[in-house]
Length: 451
Image 1 (spheres, rainbow, N blue to C red):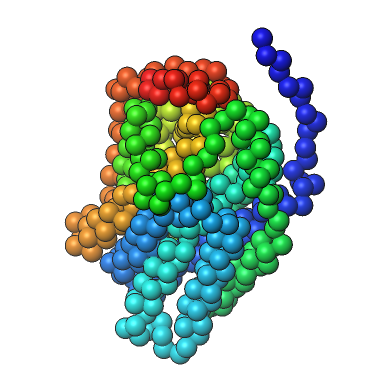
Image 2: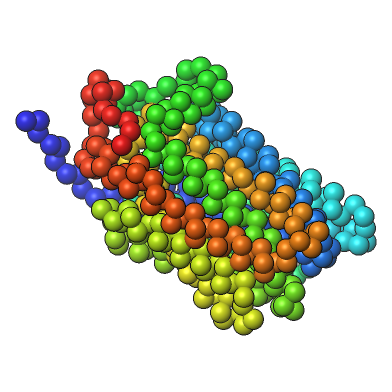
């Protein structure tokens, strides 16, 4: 029997200056991202009052993000990830600053050119943002050693959850105390600060990563081989061989359609119809973010619900119930409670499934598979925005009905997972049972890929 390696001393990531630079730069970017999305959505609703303009603006942001997401994943395997992140953050800061400067011009907010300025800003923002996330999700092996990847990933996720809470709070603070123009200009400053931090980030040599891959007896990454399209199709072909991955991706695709449009469009419009201000909308978004932090903590304490995956459809059903119930709010406190429930259930669903994917997918395929998951999770976002925009503009559905229908659909689809044998037997996957223990390349090739 092979001897197991002696456990290494714990490493304090907070004392690792390079990881701290990555974490701080990522946090600033995520906070500015969240604040920009809330501020832009409320700006469109408040200034134009048009459901169509709001829907088109969100479409302009989500379509390029969708188109370039897989390209960004391939680019992250081919080029220096630090400079991809740096360029994306810098470009987003310039884009938002440009929009803020346009708003400083007298009469722009009331002119007919305003929608087109918002469309262009959203399109450019979504394009450069698509390259950031694949690089961010795959840069950690160049910053920390392999044995520290799990806690490092957890801390980056904490930063993301903080942004879900802090972003709306920052947006509410800026919108309450400054004009729209200065709010956007100050948000751009956060992006510029992030670039200064990332500029000083030093990545570990690629040779060190290759040695770790060899020592761990893992298949060598094929990131340098073939064109972007070939690498993307390799990831797709692999995913098609694992039925449970297809099921997870398909569910993510459909549920996102039922969440993104109804919540991101229906919620601010409903707040406006109820006569509330931007503070109320920001508070509802903050409650959703706080819920994700609570749900993440619960998922962590429960070990990702290992052995209890059949609870996940129930969590999805409760998430849908929270969204649907929010459509009937007449008091802000009730809406906050429902958004808190929806956010909690969302995290208690997402985190276990991400852990599952990271465990059963071989390391050399993980980057592309995770890019595909992101692609699928936003895949029907543009369709959702377009459909919701049409339904709202034509007065076919009101904002509260949109939330009700979206939430009910999420609940039904979530429970529908129980009908699929591959999901019910997901935890029987050999790599999940073994805890993702690394195997030699020859053995990994013989391991069954489906459940």
